[in-house]
Image (cartoon, rainbow, N blue to C red; front, side):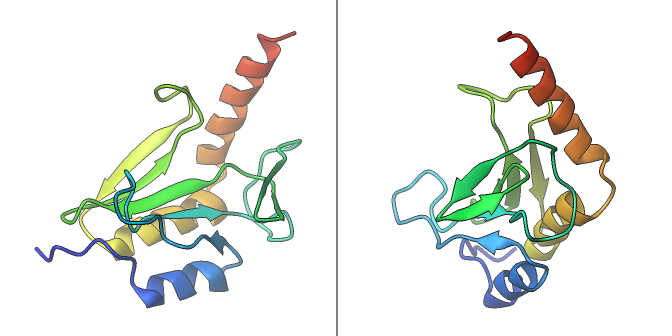
Length: 131
């Protein structure tokens, strides 16, 4: 298996072509070194959470973002809003290749809304606990 940590240019193009935001890679020494943040801008059609508001680099988002990174052997897609650890609806998916990880992200934002719905339900439970 190749030991590659950096995201392929074609993967970045595929994500951006679908309308997703892709950040610049995290710097050397960062926990997710060479990884990126991927998010869905409000202007892009796809799965979203009503009343979800988040901005990244002046881009309004209507869905939780994910982190895409590699440890050199596997690729990971992480959606975690819980602190310090995962909360209900959060996930970490491990893939053998970059293409599988990119397909997972595209499915999260544009496939069955069930995965996003799990995040929505978890957010509702959390915010209702504050009232």
